[in-house]
Length: 394
Image 1 (cartoon, rainbow, N blue to C red):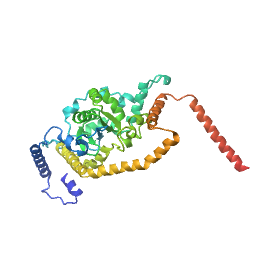
Image 2 (image 1 turned 135 degrees about the vertical axis):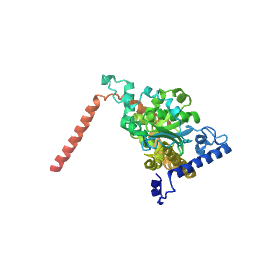
Image 3 (image 1 turned 60 degrees about the vertical axis):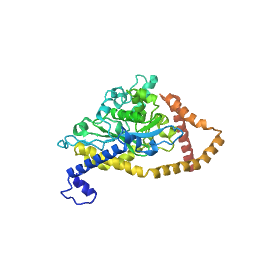
């Protein structure tokens, strides 16, 4: 592992640069940081989650409330695996301010069977009579079509769980890219997302929104889980990230895509993908590492990532503010002109989404006269082409 680090940094490897030396330096650094945190009063529970991002967590006196009050995102990454039986002789212990404990995760192991939108529960919904398709079956099929598009939602194979001890990580981050929580995944399942959502709701204020690749199906999963009452009472919503949302069906987009959510502005909630673009560089170093070194490298990576995001925070806010002003200044005249030409008011734009959703949900089966209309249009097109060919030949 040390040889790989030396190669990455173009430094000649020397015997003195051994794993125990690096581990000792890391443990010493963790101890010093812990003592500093105690002296400054930073050792309170969830201190990192409450103070890592000043833009999200710090409020000014008499600051008007926002809705959503906070924007987060979470997602899983299967690249940060660790081969089973690697480094069992390493008995070092490690803690991380990001890590959600195994006990907090296993609370939700029995919630998974209650999920109405898991792949196994919805992939084979076949109504007996198409004309009598129930709304529940249609909703299940829509959830399945969305869920099946994403690798994070699909079941990890049995061979994967046999080969790897940790099959990946599940991470949450604020809208500014600062990592909040980390979960080590040992198999597939909704319990990792449920444990992360539960932690976010326990620590942060109500009226928050969380982006997830399959936020549509996970919303229904959370609604039937043990945290259902908490989600409802805190008015916590789960939506679909902007880029991933375009691969979901149209009914799903109208309800969960960030483009149609009030208060999200230009936010895409693709934060975790940016986090993973940096953490994936650690994957070759930890694939055969002990658990201590596996978590050590991930913790160091996320800590450095957060420091970099903190330094760029002012620039990030400035660029987003500038982009929002440009959109408002450039597009407002065009929108106002369109409203005058079509005799529209602002409420019409909201009604269009609701009307489109109502129309799409009513199309459980193809209307009989639609194919006839299509055939008629195709016949007219063929006639037009034939007349044009005859005209050229004359």
